Image (cartoon, rainbow, N blue to C red; front, top):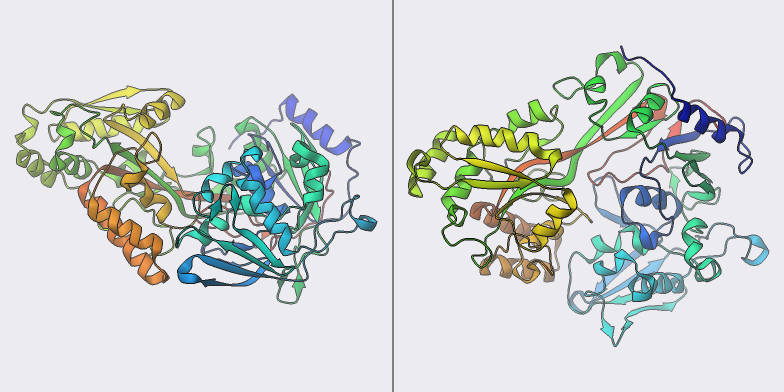
Length: 552
């Protein structure tokens, strides 16, 4: 049984939450409370780059389209669209019943209607270099551009057209990112850089207040356009986000019922909340729900394949050696003992299992087969590892346990693995500059399309200018990649993706360690909290059985 104590800093924060004069608590309302230890740097969707900002912006804004729980594209403010001119023109038809949140500088302080020119402005704002939005990279080479003028145009109040340089089948996936939400130009002009602290959107909740280091409060948008059957969404009256930094304190607040929801798990309380097999500790089963789902995050080791950057005598140039490493360690055992069974053993391809199109049709990868690994070593000219040079694995301190596990198991088949530990920033820099023969990396999906993963092996994306950190090059792969980008049908595109994933997996420019999992913990009183493989937090259908003060 853990001991519950409240640090002085938590008492102080709770006092501020309850007594602060910036926000008057509402009695008898349903409030969803969660914590962001890293804080929220901006509520402007133009800067919705990390999870904390994305989660908040998802409650405040809407885009043309959105993703459902299975990560399929569905309508949002755009009720329909058509794709014309061999995939280079997209016409979006907007709903006519959507309004921005009330704002004092709108006429009579009432939210005005959203029209197509709002999206023309919002998307061009992201693409404007002066905005410095990290979202620009996802469309600036895709949308047709004539001397800095992008082909995003409102044809009338209800129709928006976007023209592309060439067919690009993952376009809708990229457009679903929160960067491309509707914002009112007059509010952005009025607040300037402070729009991120005074957001005006269309979402299920509207902004009430935010105090750095204390709390963000968002209130129910009573005029929100989406329904659940006959019920207008959202169900909640408010969302309150605290900013407690210490992870152990966050856990204690959650256990005491002062937070309704917690995502992921920190090592400081992992063994208290979970059993060794990854299931919920029985003592919490009465009060808590635990949800899990494959996460679009592939944890892997990457081999530098370019002879210009590593020794020509490096054994890693030999495919059989790379395959021997893949077969030579037990991923399931590694996950069980080092990660409390959080994650899925990486025995398939680079595209994670939560990606649409890869849920059931899995790429054939590498399982634990030490005898085959030994055969591959012999085939490469190093029977039992004799005369095989040592291999250095570069990683960070957070993954040293995995590196040592591999070191021990690969040692049993005759491979000598040395471990080189770096600071995360230094390791990322060396990987980007092609200076490491064998490195630990991870890739979290930015959007729900396998192209986002397979682009890491497209030869035109060689680092340092792209994300092909291994400098993998295969003409057949490149051809398939380009065909997939230009394909019109989803089934054809998915088939090409699977071919590419199998091809690159067979060549083994990487070792898949595991595919991460989304973990969500909530109290039993929280209803309809979904889960998805991008860990998008969608609160519009959530309800809470008990009522409380928003300031609690």
